[in-house]
Image (spheres, rainbow, N blue to C red):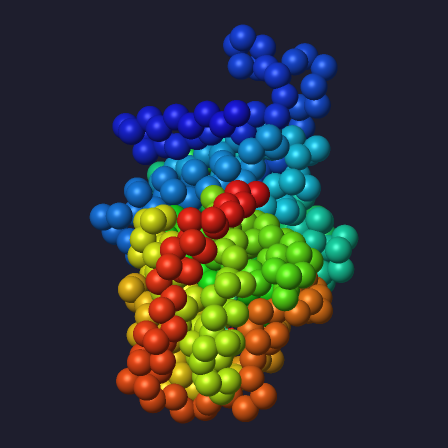
Amino acid sequence: MIRADHTQDESFLTARCLATPRTAAGEPPANEEVTTKTYLLKTGELVLKRGNRAMFEKILFRNLAAMLKGSGAQIICKDGRFFVRCRESACAAVEDVLPRLAGITGWAAARVTGKDKNALLQICVDEALFCFERGARSFKIETRRTDKSFPLSSYEINCAAGDAITAALPSFKVDVHTPDAVISVEIREKTFVYSNANKGLRGLPAGTAGRGMLLLSGGIDSPVAGFLMALRGMSLSAVYFHAYPYTPDEAKQKVITLAALLRRYTINLRLFVVSFTAIEQRIKTAAPPQWGTVLLRMAMMECASALALRNKCKCLITGESLAQVASQTVENIACTESKAAFPVFRPLIGMDKEEITQKSIKIGTYQTSILQYADCCTLFSPEHPILHADLSEALSIYDSLDLAELLKTALDTCETIKS
Ligand code: ATP
Ligand code: MG
């Protein structure tokens, strides 16, 4: 269960992602482990959103709460900073979620104390020891003082913390240019000290930029395309065109796995599986062979557009990359696009295969994408595909195929896979 309270006068959002039963007073049972850890999250682009910032923060908060569901962690948002507090036993779950959270530029486990100068210097020394024990031999202090009533300036805090650390650990040297460890101090409603913050995914929280329909095949490219749009704040629906028995059920299962992997970055992804067997057979039997792939892509676009309309999507997303294969020359893309009823986003259009592959390794879809099962496109692809299709010719052959009834049946029988 997730409970979110928004107390407006404090601009304070907080939620507890309950994992364990609690007492009526909301306290954990007496014998429960109580050591807590605090993570501090940095939001980057959100800060630029001015009037919409509260909405962006609310969605980020909701996404984080959904991703941490069942962990027992508590989420706090105050003055544009997000904090996650959890028991030691939930740290692994929290550290699994934060690198997958779109909309944050960085995160770190922080030491927390009040605004007493000696307590502040003590946690700086503790953090320095932590860094030193992990091999760092030089450090730098960076202070941000949001609370201007604190008696020391940022510069004075840097100096005092530096002195305290070198007194406690004489072989840990100050290096303001290329330090092994950057120890950050933030003075807010409390004092937070952390080092070497982890990089976040950046981008915008999923769900802040409308919903798009991703054409998800089993290849390397389309999952990466979906990921990149999710990172721009887009919620995703996905469609896979299946051609059983020409493409085996393992190919469909592979796409279901890819959708589940994408769901790790964007919540509420719904996958539609549309049977394209009859449409592929019609193209194969009634169209000139060299036109096969282009016509198939046009049919996919038409079908995906209808599905997008039904599911309140505002654009289509593909993994196309200019001239990667015959169907992706500029002329052939123009033919494909002619059947799209929505803007088509192609985030990979200018990327080469190596770049896309590296990205897919990074987001964890590569190993699934390279599993070898026949895809409907490769299976039906002609030996000599047309490279620079003429749009009016493409449209007239497409019309002659009379696919409307087959497309309607494909849509009416489409399968929905939620998780
Ligand atoms: P690969 O990594 O092998 O290039 P791919 O998925 O990009 O895989 P392409 O033949 O390049 O395959 O297809 C271009 C785009 O068309 C895909 O990125 C995808 O968006 C869409 N597409 C192709 N086949 C299907 C399919 N069976 N179902 C849904 N979308 C598809
Ligand atoms: Mg491709």
